[in-house]
Amino acid sequence: MDGTIVTCPMHHVQFDVSSGQALNQPVPVHIDEPLPTGWARSMGHFGMLMQHTSVCDIKTFLVKIDGGTIHVEIE
Image (cartoon, rainbow, N blue to C red; front, side, top):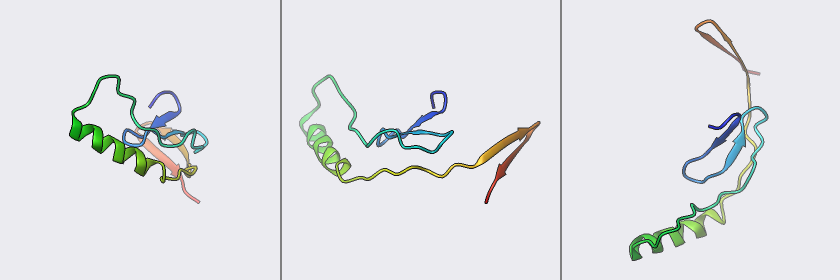
């Protein structure tokens, strides 16, 4: 998490937790060095799967911290 932006470690999709807005589509990890053949093939398949992954905004809830208690407003 960086400020109000949380990033999915697998899909690299980013969300703004203050609004729930999805900020981007899944992207493959950029790797500058060559991968072993098996890994390169797997990453190619992973990239093809990510092309078909859809992203939507996430639901957010009002949160208040009161001392050691966390209050979450649920509709």
